[in-house]
Image 1 (tube, rainbow, N blue to C red):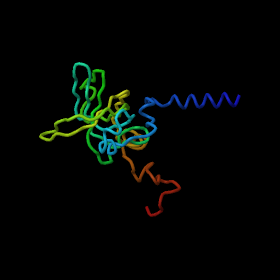
Image 2: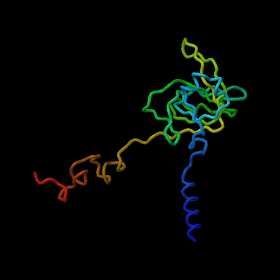
Image 3: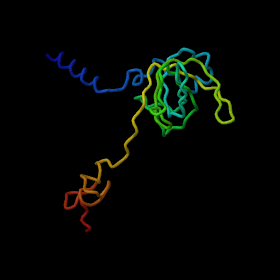
Image 4: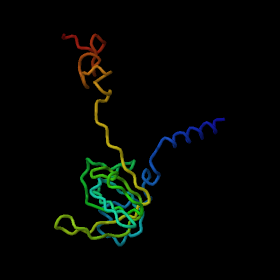
Amino acid sequence: MKRHLLSICILLLSACSNLPPAIENPPLYDISYSEATRDIARFKDAPVRWGGVVIDVENEQNFSLVQVLYYPLNSYGRPQLDKPNEGRFLIKSPEFLDPAVYKKDIEITAAGTLKGDIDRAVGNKSLRLPIIAAKVIHLWPAYEYGNYYGYGGYGGFGYGYPYYGFYGYPYYRGGYFWPYWY
């Protein structure tokens, strides 16, 4: 009985993640952007998982290219926008990627194989950008910034957080923790 209960718990917990396994789990040897750009020929056809922010989408007859500003990934595979970016790379997909969906400044993570590099003009400068043949592409939802306790402050009273009065942290009026100087 305990074995069955343990297996059911493991099954339920594993079902909670809605990320594709290729995005959630890095490759065995996770090649960083800086390693790959130093010696692109050495890492050709190596599995990579990179992410960042979409800059541009180009659709050709048989494939789509997404130009991405690279950011390091956190443990779940989401780009860490608070870290410095390291450069640009391209994601190549055999599918049509709609520019209305893959909009500028949306966070993206791709898992696939490193296929080499390609020349791209950025303004008047020509850059060699690494290119990934994507197997999985994941767009991240936008962060919802707001009050920790929901709309209208703590408990919906409209005071905002933290409010050091009625129901506020770290004290509450008339309570055990309120200072006696009032």
